[in-house]
Image 1 (tube, rainbow, N blue to C red):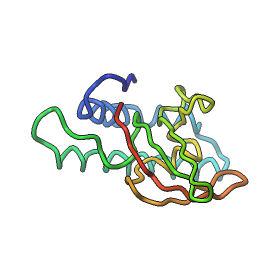
Image 2: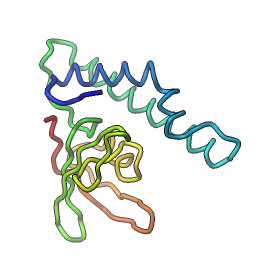
Image 3: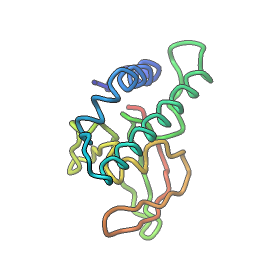
Length: 148
């Protein structure tokens, strides 16, 4: 799914279509069905998370029904670049959110199902969030969301 160089409406509709048609395949690829209770729980949580994301996209599109040229959402979405400021150091870092197969953390491209990406997805601009990753808890503020 190429999210670059298309308008916001097309990007969001494309994501809705992708997850509507391929959510089970997406889950099977990244969280294969298993008898392990932890994997079953993680799969269920990820499915609910993606469904919440789809609902948020639908709401945004329903609130911007006129015209093809709609503004960049004020929340982090797949394909956007989010700039966060780390509260403990005031250092800013930018991350592009992508699908797992496009992930390249060394170049700032993080998966929406990674610990960091999943906590940034749907975060509102100017919100402060606590990022919990293996071995670390960090507070950040979402300072910018870019659609490019």
